[in-house]
Amino acid sequence: MITFIRQSGFDVEERPPAPSPSPALLDVVTKLLREQPFCFFRIAYGGELQIHLGEIREFPSARLRRRERGSYVLGTRASAWVVYSKGESTLLASDRDAVAGLVDQAGPGVGADARLIEEGDYVPAGTAVKDVALHRVHDGVGLRLRFLDGSRVDVLPTDADREDASDGADDELPDWELLDADSHLLSVGPGVKWSYDETD
Image (cartoon, rainbow, N blue to C red; front, side, top):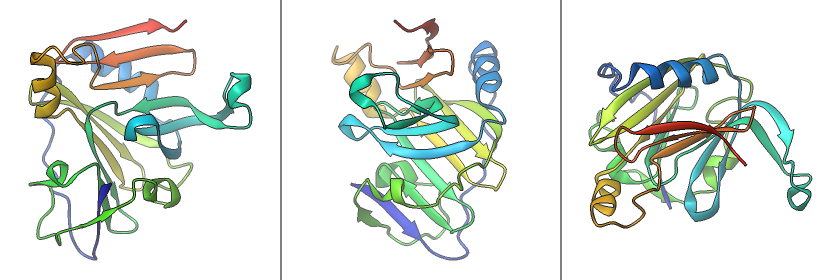
């Protein structure tokens, strides 16, 4: 289930992100994603939102033949997310808490099937990433992607992620990950730690 809000004339509060918690990480993410075209959204196993960018490719696995992915795949893992579609005055979020304080005078929102995001044109295909920003969210690193048409995606580590880590549950589950075109995996979190390594 996701939160779906559509109404004309609402604005998402545009707070400038605080300075990046890691200039080196921001440099890596910006080099990878700036100017990459948006391909599509996909809801993956466990309800994780994936944002596919770059060139559309077939999966290399024979088992997944005829299934496509972007050359860059951003996975939200256990983080909350918000997608704001400028063209349709639509906001979709992983849950109502992710939207709290972001929307001025928005309606209550309605629960919707998570697959709704795969079917809509919330970020038009081919729209390039204009700008990338990182900011502190709770004890983690959040990510904002802005697209040329004014749409944006925010990935927001949650308090629940921090509590799970402190309980020892899923303490190695990153807040978000980015698989790049050369099969390197950027893993961010929990907390401000990150790694950028070649995958097997």
